[in-house]
Image (cartoon, rainbow, N blue to C red):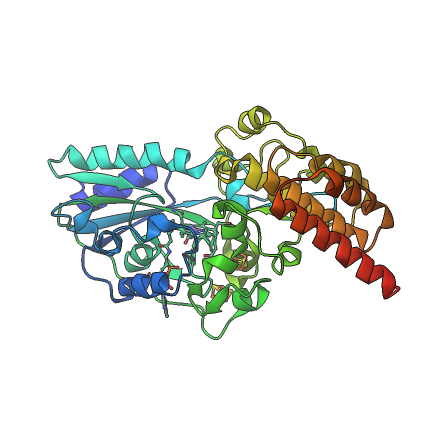
Length: 379
Ligand code: B12
Ligand code: SF4
Ligand code: SF4
């Protein structure tokens, strides 16, 4: 029996390894307009690319002229691997344990777009970096609903899904939008350590640890550093809090399994890494996006939160790092450890005597002051 176009696309998406596919008609989605308000409030922080042409982000027919249908696909990335509670280890969010999902999805989405184009229609593949509100369209196609943490979760796979889209000018029968099943639950909001979910469904990225550890290039605000705990790249806390996780299924895709021990990496191994070593170690990994300076900044903060005295020599070494950003956060970490461990304090004064960067000097001075205040109050 010959499948109609809609069924053929869904079957092809399955064949390509996507776990779910749904279709929606191109239309104005009322919540799309909230993007402007989100930007107006400055919730995007330094992600200036989100400011560019919001009208395109809100209207897929500006991405593909004449677009009539959005096909959204979901890829499950849940694994059965558990994290460790070892304080010497950092926490990397699950999406970054294995191969970069952009690479995993891009080829498959292009194959799906080519498949559609063979019928004579125009088709364009989009993933993550494309200017499209992926989560709104996923809800519209029935794949899942936007939870109060703002990510899409599905009854079949919970929240551990990546999204991708193909736009086409073919007019195809749409699916029904998904209903929201959050009900009165607010576990994700309560679990967020930085209160980044400022209202149900609304995330202020400037407070979100995923933003601070991946996208943000400068210093991490001092008041938020202790709240980062052991997180060194991304954050899964709101996703992990969700009761729908009991329906998560282990993904068969080997590409998402942790590589190089990223499910529980010893933190101090990263300090002192050269730029070449960083690029080599994280080739094909999403971690490359933080760049060496940002990643080592995160590692310093996690070490400062670890209470681990064995980290002190590595942090003292990082006080001499080529990047001021790393030196500044190493100073904070030593100051923070110094409150518990007197020996963490020594290197700070030695570094202050030779440090010329103003920001690093400020961080060292603040760390020494915190230590002295703590000493004088006798705690
Ligand atoms: C920018 C961005 C971020 C930013 C901002 C996050 C955010 N919530 O917007 C930062 C860096 C913080 C981030 C973090 C993460 N991200 Co991100 N990110 C994006 C990106 C590139 C754009 C998102 C965007 O447009 N945001 C702008 C705001 C306005 O959009 P929004 O949150 O959807 O806001 C809507 C709601 O507030 C809604 N709304 C307002 N009021 C109401 C009321 C109700 C009742 C409802 C239902 C909705 C609603 O209207 C708004 C407009 O649509 C998308 C890819 C894409 N192109 O879409 C990936 C994407 C959203 N990220 C993704 C992932 C996996 C993550 C992380 C889990 C990674 C990690 N583990 O660290 C975290 C999750 C943090 C979180 N709780 O959101 C996935 C999510 C997959 C999924 N299942 O939904 C995406 C879709 C990438 C992908 N292709 O798979 N991300
Ligand atoms: S990813 Fe982490 S910091 Fe961001 S909203 Fe979720 S729990 Fe909060
Ligand atoms: S934790 Fe609760 S409120 Fe948050 S997404 Fe899951 S069901 Fe919705």
